[in-house]
Image (cartoon, rainbow, N blue to C red):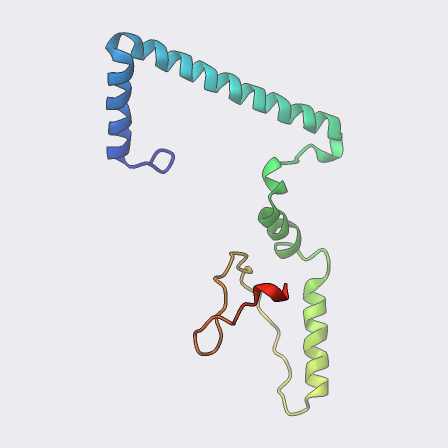
Length: 138
C-alpha cells in the first residue's frame, strides 16, 4: 500500500507517533518532516539537473535509473537489435542446418521472450546433494 506496508502497520506507526510526540506537537513534527523531505527531494532534483547540464545536450534524455545494471542490459542489449544479434542468431541457425543435414530448415523465428536476469539458487548435484567442499584446497 504505502512503502510496502499494510494498513495495520500504518496504524501502529500513527499511534506510536501520537504517544511519542503528543497531540500538541504532532502537527508541528509532521510539518517539519514533510518540509525536510521536500528539501531533500529538491536537492536531489537539482543535483540530477546539474549532472545532465554538465553531460551536455546529447545526454538530455539521460535517466539515472538506466545506470542500474539490469536496466542497462535490458534496454541496451535485449530490447533493441542495434548490434545485429538477430542476424547472428539467424546465421547460427543456418550453420547448424548446413552441418546437420537431417535437421529441418529453421523456420523464421518470432521475437524471443525477454531473458530472465534473476539470480537462480545454487545447483545441486544429480542426487540432490551438494558437492564436497575442501577448505584446504582453496
